[in-house]
Length: 625
Image 1 (cartoon, helix red, strand yellow):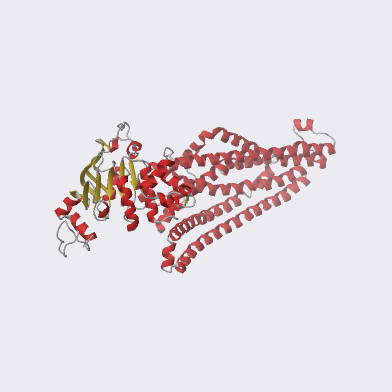
Image 2: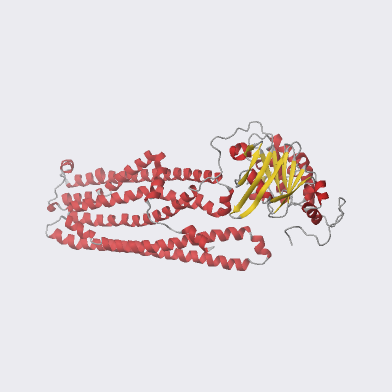
């Protein structure tokens, strides 16, 4: 488990040009808005140097005119020679509009990039979910659901932060630093270099901060992953915890995981708590240098008082972008790690897809053929080998056998959840790999052993998004599977809310609802995979009555453990260790006294078997001890 968490949360490089180029492709549809934000942040960065310069002009021209301030021609011509009027001009005509324009530019770029970030997040989630829907079932066997949900939520949110407040904001901080440095060097390069002398200390502090935050961030992410995994598992299995009195032990385990998260966060808080005051302290040191050196230079007439004051203000503004850039470094590092995981998912090849030149399937009859089919979920571990049988239109074919015989694998291959590795499967004489997936699967209705219900209503779970199914058809389907009376007794009838996974319904009710769903879609071939194995005898009786109507005039493939449900099947296929061992009707197989007979005796050993004498007590099912 620890290895899994570690693999999940490993952080890559702070910057990967390959990943960044791929990420920036998502900005292409919104390049105009992004360009607007870049221009706005560029102008904003330039304007950050204006207030300090205006303060210098005011001091040198009006408050300390002895400084001999020389103004640019445009300002000398524009500003009044009257001190009172000139101060008003600087304050309300130049300084205030500069501040207002800076606010508008910052708001514009922030709003534009937040909007772009949301659009990119929307596009990325659509792409990931669309890709997930097309992947083969084997991919989901190898990857836990929690990890895939993290890709669509947490990892995409991190990329949203990158686009909304990372990429463009980095340029903004850079332009701000550059404009301030240019103005400081222009005003007095010696005093500017003295101010920049503290930069090596800033670099050392920032490097130490990055290393500390990188480690604490990694630990935080691992701890969050463990908390999520632990909560998901133990909330789902809370009834087992209570049954075996494991609440206290479970709480202690959670407390340890939660404490690890708290300790990691404490280290992060400590790093941030030290970093910002340290940078502020260095900034104060820079101000001290300016006060000492700049003050001395002003007394000697080397620089004006206004220049010294402007340097003090610039030094305070100069270190804020450096702090922001350090934060952006952490954001960039997290974004690179998240993008690498997302692109790894998106690069997972779709192995089961429509053929380039699909065969048409205009008037399907429902003939199915398994021809020397072989398949293995894992290499060198065959689940099916040389399996061959046919299902004629209108037939009800049952597949029986002990657990692990390969029964469910047959339906997975028939619906192309997996592709066969040996042999081929045909539908109306056409290899199913030559058909469109939609054309193939729309002819099937499947009822699983563990029915899955979605949050919504009774009607929406029967209709399952198929708007062409009318209310009358929904009602008729419920009636045919003996579910109508139960639904009509509900407070809201067909509009009764269904909780997540049908939590408010019994297993039998969920199974009947699953039957109604299959019937409402009127499939040409009905697949029942252990559909009655988890229901009580009374519900099974209701299902039998519904099944008689359900399979009438319809091709059916029934996989069952309870032989009572398939005695009237047209043909019964007996599977054993991945091979077809027997094929025949119920009566024919009993007379053969083979595997099916032993299965039947095992289930009805307390009842008299009229078709044949009892098997000796030492008889056992092949493959079982």
